[in-house]
Length: 248
Image 1: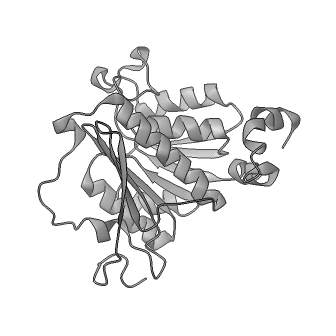
Image 2: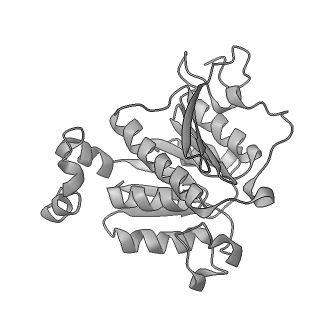
Image 3: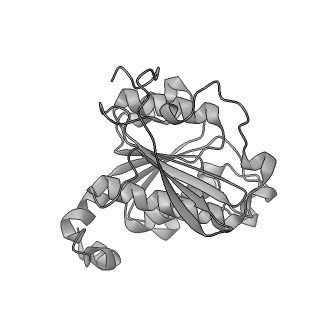
């Protein structure tokens, strides 16, 4: 680290759990954020500010007027622009010391593996189960920690999955692919600060997992109710017959 970086990250370096060594590990890390929407926006901003040296941001969509209520990385002037390009500009403006790589494409089994294989942590901020299942499968196969979050109405949830470990569940242990009654914020709406709250916790968990700090939510689902302002943890049990992680 140079003097400029020591000053920029001084408040983090002051924390004994992080110190210079931990900050250098943050700077040396690579994280993939999939989805530059309501969750990916605060997640990316906080990870960039914290000094994650290489952020890979993936999204195939363009900025729309209805996004701006919660997708705080984008501005009114960005309407019509690719989300990854809009987000990259804001991240580099916030922290020009980092590297931002964009993947302006739909995530599927072929390109996910190539993106995931060289990163330290994957953060899923997508809004559909099909993508979440694909991301989970790739993370298990590539042995990468997955920090998965979701938000709808006044509610959010987040967990850390390490399904490649013998005693740890994966995302598909929690939700089966043939499940019914699934909802999304597109159909049901979401209050903007709830997305910000969950996305911020997602960024927090990424740093904690990277540095091995505190409670990491492995094998636990954190449920957040914004109306009651309540937080509840639910244990996730590894499915011995899970088609994704049971053989790992």
